[in-house]
Length: 479
Image (cartoon, helix red, strand yellow):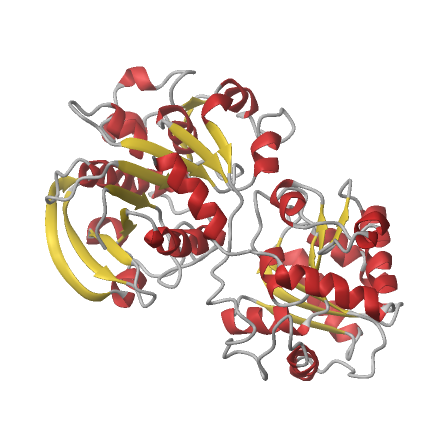
């Protein structure tokens, strides 16, 4: 792929090579969506074994000597989706299996600081053409793992690429002891309130915010929320001060991967026009979890990390209400051990009504999206969220908290909205137990009015949830 503008994407994960969350989906979809523009996008990833294994036609294109105690080989190839990938092959930094950030006990890996500082330094060197002939016009770095890239570039001499930094979730800030500063080659003067200092620690995320030319986050509402004391997680004041360079652009989803008409995980294809296959998907999901097919209420689905941030404690509390109203629940996810136990216990206590799968399974995620009537996303905060976009695409009605990207992407099916033929889901606010119960009751009531239910479902399936609009917005930022 050739073009006038050269964009270097920098991030720690990318679907389908390695994934722990939504960052991977964005890293794997946005570069491909930008192909329709006159840009040359190269995606830089750390050389984890899973990434190297998934790379096709990999060739060595360059080297960087002596980064964090070892040499780095740059390998270029493509992913199975045709994305052009540059891998930083540095066994001394990245040669381990499993989660890129957490160890087997679920705790932060002790050497995350030096590892991701080195990754950012590699990115800055690649962007300047120090590894091989390719030079970037724009560097687009993602989340704290790539946060120091702009800090390193700010120290470079001569003509430098412009920098864009995307915050996917402000809750993860990449905080490390200040003693790390000297070993990662950043000058003492950067450790200041106007630099990367955060409560006497180095914040990799803050570095990305401060030193980048443009900062984006993954929805307009979340961009407003993070400029407040309540939503800013200690960085609200800084983001408000820098709001001239802050943009909120809602994510899309890969509509080829998420397409009920061509999804190999589903028993029958279906679409907004031919929706019969949706019933087959529900039947298959009920069979998979041993749920009673004669249930008269909706089947609620959860595909999520099981944490309080995602509001799953509220769902656990609402289980008696769901069970008592002839509705059903399927939960797919992992996280907080108490929540995992609560959902497993519920599945044992209510066979035929509640089904639980602890862990993550990509195929099953597609089946839950297709087989559910309602997908629950009651998050206390949500930068963008992709689950509700997939839900609409699959004709499942998203029931969401009115926060962040959920507020931006779901139109509440209020009486006024329905009167005008609008409404793609159900919103509730504020995020509390009583409000969730009211929203569940609304869903169960709407489900019994088939004509209205079909209208809301069709509205959602017709929404453009692709990367087309976000890609256009990013392209104009690069310009």
